[in-house]
Image 1 (cartoon, helix red, strand yellow):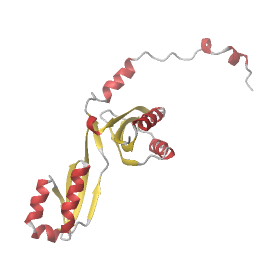
Image 2 (cartoon, one colour; image 1 turned 180 degrees about the vertical axis):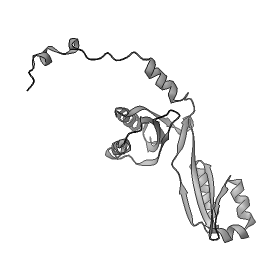
Image 3 (cartoon, one colour; image 1 turned 30 degrees about the horizontal axis):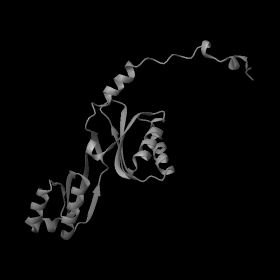
Image 4 (cartoon, helix red, strand yellow; image 1 turned 45 degrees about the horizontal axis):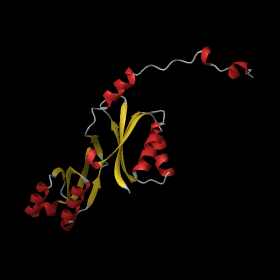
Length: 195
C-alpha cells in the first residue's frame, strides 16, 4: 500500500548531487511531491527533505540507493506521524476587496495569515501550516478574487531525532579504516606488470 513518506537526507554541499538524486527517482518512475534543500545545523552539511507517495519497500530501496552516493552522509525515511512538518503559502488578492470586506480580515486571522505586502492593486498574505490548512485558505479566498497562490516545499524535523551532530559523533568515534598497505595487496596484483 502506498503512503506519503518524507525522506531526510544529509549531504555534503556538492555541485550535481541534486541532479544525481533526482535521476534515481526518475529511473524508478517515482514522482517527487515536494523537494526542499537547505543548510543543516552543522556547517557545510546540507539537508534535503523529499516527499514521495510510494510503498515502504520502494522507499527503503531508494533510500539505500541514495546512501551509496559518495556525497551523502545519511538518509532516513518517515511517515507523517514521525515528523513535525510545515509548508509556507502566499496568497495574492485584490486590495480593493480586502479594504471593503472586514469579513476577509477576520477569515485571514482565523487561519493565522499575515500581510506581507500591500500595493494599490493587490495584497499578499502569508501563512504556514500543513497542506490541508493551506488548501482550505485557497477555497476561502477564491470568492474574493484570489489572483495567485504559491506554496513552498515541505520542511520537516524528525520527532525522535537528537540531531545529525550526534550521528556525526558516532561516525567520528567509530574505528578508523585501516589504510591499504603492501601487506593487503593480493598475490595476483603483485605479480601483474605495469604497462
